[in-house]
Amino acid sequence: MNDPIYQLFLYNEWANKTLITSLKRQAEAIPPVCLNLMSHIVNAQMIWSGRINGEKASVGVWELHTLEACEAYHDQSSAILQQKIKRTDSPKPTIVNYTNTKNESFSNALQDILLHVFNHGTYHRAQIATELKKNGISPVNTDYITFARK
Image (cartoon, rainbow, N blue to C red; front, side, top):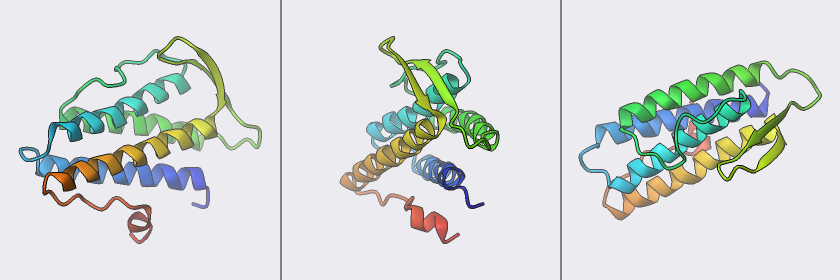
């Protein structure tokens, strides 16, 4: 598919799944901050998926989960994001009206929200890689080019 938003969705899906799988294999050794950050990644996806659908958040921004719950939340929110991407064929931007966690109201284009979600995940996956390295654990490679080569 040539749609760059959908391509970034696929990358985000792959990178999060790859990272969760790797963290599960090393669960006993990973520093707690890695689970905090992975939980935050999936919480943000859940929150934004809810906002896109006009729903209240079912998780808190920094709510802590098990790796199994992270995987389930990732799968749930990814399905919603994929559905929204596939339904936005209109050249006119889809505007999403939402309230943030500080109860402030905003309106943004769906495309900008999606780019934010995917970029946010990349940022925090890099933080997880850094924490793993600091603790003598080799992080899994979740670079975009690694995904593109598959």
